[in-house]
Amino acid sequence: MPNIEGTPYEVEPAVLDRTRELSNRVADLRQSGALSPDVLGRLRRFFKIKNIYHSNAIEGNVLDVGETRLVVEQGLTITGKPLKDQAEAKNLSEAIDFLEELARDATRPISGTDIRQT
Image (tube, rainbow, N blue to C red; front, side, top):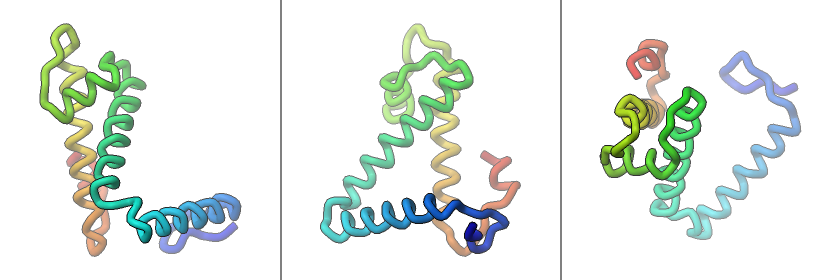
């Protein structure tokens, strides 16, 4: 199995081939203009909300995906839903934003301290 450069990990050749194929498709879509910054932003927001919803649902959070979107994107308080669940959604959103900000700086590795700060 090939090693993942700069890490102690290995990857199955079939996974590596599929990843390269997807990377090429994304590059083609970007080149064609189909993945404009606006489209990429909408995709990012969509998957961020889905990630928050599913992560919190595993922990017993009772907000549905629409309520999660309202809490995170609009800052609304949902009547009849636990404030704790709404705070969890907001906090996870802020943590994701923080980690994405760290990831944008390719010159600085993300440390354990950074992870604990979230």
